[in-house]
Length: 305
Length: 166
Image (cartoon, rainbow over all chains, first blue to last red; front, top):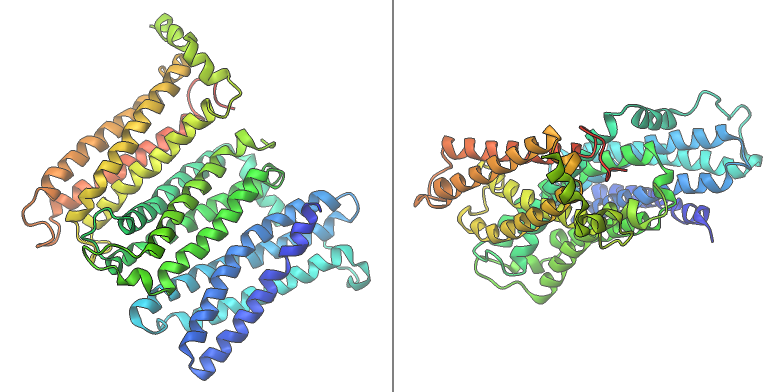
């Protein structure tokens, strides 16, 4: 088992996941099925979360096979994957936002259907292309003639830009800290309330704070990708970073509990939260402090940097 | 002055913080400082944004209950901050960026005190929309903490080369 295995394991999820999500989304729109509609938005969101470590494991796989295959094939795959990844993350973010509004409106917000339909189709198409280019790396029998594009490599060019200018890294770090603080606003206020602080506030009121947390996460995903693309080997060789990504996926599942299940919504002013809600609130705080811990400890506990 | 700073920096505890390979030395102290920052700025930003009209369903008055958590974070960061300053006194104490950061932190705390008096002590809290004055205090508080984060992060990059930055 090496890091290339991780990429081989994860790399089917984005394409197949978005394929299933799209199929369900079409079925829901045609059949006007609300539950199916919400289910497909959940799939878009979770698959977008899984796409984060999937993208990153690609750089780890590259380390394993780079001496055995033509570099151009990997560069072309990486460029296609980054394009697909960007569109997929935007789709996941908007799917989450639609899901958030769904709870308030009891139906899909008007803006969401055309935008998410279009973006998820583009994301699916780009990801399928990236997957195909990835398959060609180790399957020369399916290579199209002239498939190797010698000029490819904008993902690497972007990485060179990040590390090539002294101002980019510190600026991204500062924004990463700002994003962390914004995310902590939501995590602390919502989850500490569920644990019994400031009980005058109902859960339905706190629900308004959740997009702020997602905005903080989005800022940190963007700035985090600057770091990753700038110096992928600092992360792909660092077990501490794998834990960080595992915790990010768990946190994505955790947030869905507060949006999809009815249990937290029973918490009105002065109410004690049900035990299950307290467990989910405590685990949210644990997960985000854990994510901060792993991120912070990258240079100290890991073997990279 | 420099002798004094050097003496602090060479004290046994300061040397341990810098030179120990234990993760409980510098890495953990900096970790606590970062978690403290998340708590301090997180809670302040929540109060500020609510004053500015974000999340209007959340009543403002009960948010005061989160201030004790802010103070825990604040004192954790004061202690860890002093330890890190002592460990690196000859470079940090002569770095203007350090004083910019301290100025932002002091302004933010003074500003928060005003928010406590003008907003949380206001008998009309949650009965009328936030006044322009309260909103100005909230904007200033956000700006001060943003300044503190920025100046703090840049301490690793600007000014004299420190023994700690890698």
